[in-house]
Length: 322
Image 1 (tube, one colour):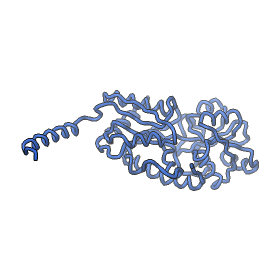
Image 2: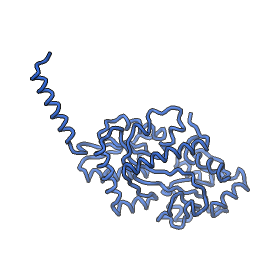
Image 3: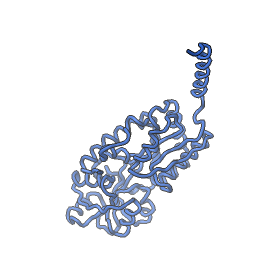
């Protein structure tokens, strides 16, 4: 048996080290934001801008680590396994919350393995058509699709993609009759739309603002609760008389489960301060997004609602990924 004095000295040393660690200010070193976004995408650019501002405010470097693929599963799996001390954050996305209902097996539990920090942006989406299509409203599109079965195509991205599920939901609940043309990615889908392979798109406002302002497309409604300042002539879904499929697109920040609440609150407050800067908010809106920072509790409620609504959307559409 070791000398009791030695034991006491060792214990004292351990306690001093533990206290020093507990009192260490956050952040104390580089912060990673693990993201499923592709490098160079608009959302990636916003994350990097937020990271730069966070670094300037805290004095610690911030990097965005891109791990695209598998609808966010690759990035979230890596983030969920990180040390829960706030130096690794997760870019949570609404599309990732479809996965539990699309995948036969998940490598993590979205509710148990992550803690909500703050939402960042909402992504208003628009249903749009070419100017050549003889419809100008949502109701006219539904009527035209019924009168011309098999004539209208939409840009989709295969099984489990949001357009596939939404348009299937709209087929069953509003009678919209469209055929999917599956593309590998959004860029290809937009090319198909502008070359006439497809006649309808459901896409984030950011992708269509320049074309909309130039009069090259018609947006029948924006899926949001209020009109967007960059597209004030486009009615909301409610104003257009379109049904609500209860699935909103957003991008936010989470952290591995076990991250101290004090750290979570610090990160949330920093992001809120960053997004409150008028020039920053204006830039985000110019890109077609809505700044939407929140408290961890508010974000937690959004995550829970997204899971519930995602389950309904997937079930209604019948989508499944093998």
